[in-house]
Image (tube, rainbow, N blue to C red; front, side, top):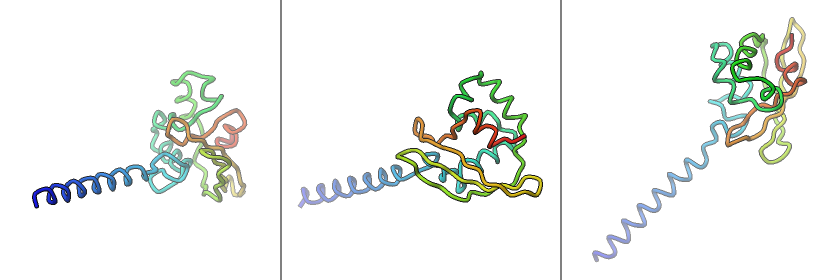
Length: 141
């Protein structure tokens, strides 16, 4: 009788632990472009920009444009950019495992245009790819 009670308790503990692990494993925060506090990666970065939290934006970018300058210079460059246009995500396409192409629609000076950005899962975080061309697409002057 005592063995059955211990066995039952053991099975209960193992079941609860596996449920907790499954819940944590399913958490996708920052792991794909659509898991940024109920929004998408670029909209999240826009909110950080509007709140002047440029240093918090840095970890969500990667690529040659980011590595071409020091972190402090990149933060300063982010702060100087105009990111006030209205935009909404129009589409998401997974190009390969851990890589996405996102299409956005924005309105600049009364003109509606579409643009695309590329994202990738880098070190367990979804990041926006930046080179000279994509920088100009996201931050048009």
